[in-house]
Length: 193
Image (cartoon, rainbow, N blue to C red):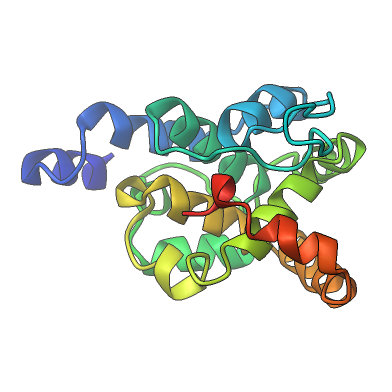
């Protein structure tokens, strides 16, 4: 709370956003919220995208809107692992410095969230987005500011840096390098930053 108040005084971030970041990180949503959040953050869908001729899990146009950024923040709060927590603390993110708050190393309920994410094929959206935005999703770029000051791209990059999404991206990348059609799909500008 002190860090949020300090940021408010400095005018670095809106007071509402800083408070939302801290509240989200300290109290993540349950796994059942995933479909709505994936849709808002990366354009995920259970339906085939008939216009583009791709499965619904293929990311759609990602635009920096308050709804997309809020959804990405919620996803990050649900998927945060111990490595993310350490990098957020090093960047002096307010939620890591909240007096009296008991901050677990990983998001509570994370296992259930990962299982639900997999059952929805939502990890595919995050993996494809990671592959298409490798230059933007580096840990140096994504964790160089406190969480409350990060852009949508940086928050999505933080999600991409979680252990499971990072491993899935690396594994999928190895096989996808040999698929010319897939390489063309990755060039689709609608999900690049």
